Image 1: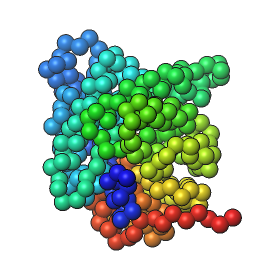
Image 2 (image 1 turned 60 degrees about the vertical axis):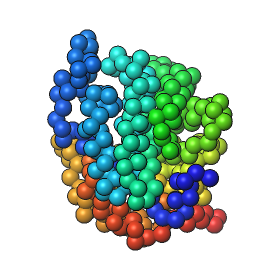
Image 3 (image 1 turned 90 degrees about the vertical axis):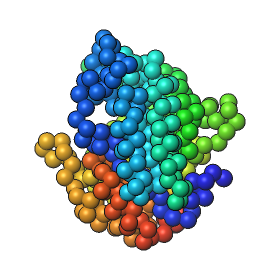
Image 4 (image 1 turned 135 degrees about the vertical axis):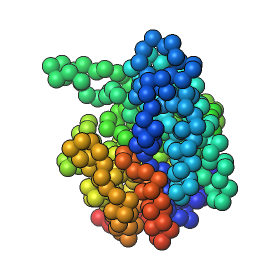
Length: 330
């Protein structure tokens, strides 16, 4: 049994908050993204946050450190777009292994600075910007911008580098298309088998709106069934919604699984300017309701959340025991 599987039985584990929100505070410009190494690269690189693990590692480290200092048990690597598919927009497909390895390595280094309690590094595996089960072209519904095999190959490369860099667990997150996620899970299982290792896996889907479905049309129950054939540390939801809007879907999840449940909601819903206004205190109160209702084992934040949010979430998490895994009797 891994260390995190022991810890999750003892207490509610706290995940970090947003990486992108924190990196935006640095107001990095094109030359900052490029650094010395990519100063003559022929394509624009601004906006490629994953690249900052190579060109601005101290900034990424300082974000990880701030979350651990705030009380996080788990930080996510800066690799949300770290596949050849995600990096194709920047013509940096050849850099994928190094990007993931370095991101995991620097997160591991920061985690090892903290010796007061076990601290964990989760390899962040995002959904890519293409979908395997829907067409991007309304006039050609049968078209696919990517297929399962392409995704599996891309995810496998990412997974290998994250493990090599020192991750304790893997987090397949912000799942809007379950077929993409299944490709990631297939890749993980393949790497585990080839290396004869076991590594805990978290899965976190995204309910896109009040319909209660993922973008590819699945309900909570359907999503759960789709990924239940893989041994998982936890299943949960993140992004798109604030803690308030996400709550009913976590309840549905809890009624249908004995797995550990995770949630990392946004800091409310974005305002007209795309900014997140929910204060740490407001979010803490909503998370307190989660804990009072025995909904989660792992809790953190997504878009718009900061170390200030995570600090208050960590404080309230100490007051409660982890969710007990009881299925609703039918």
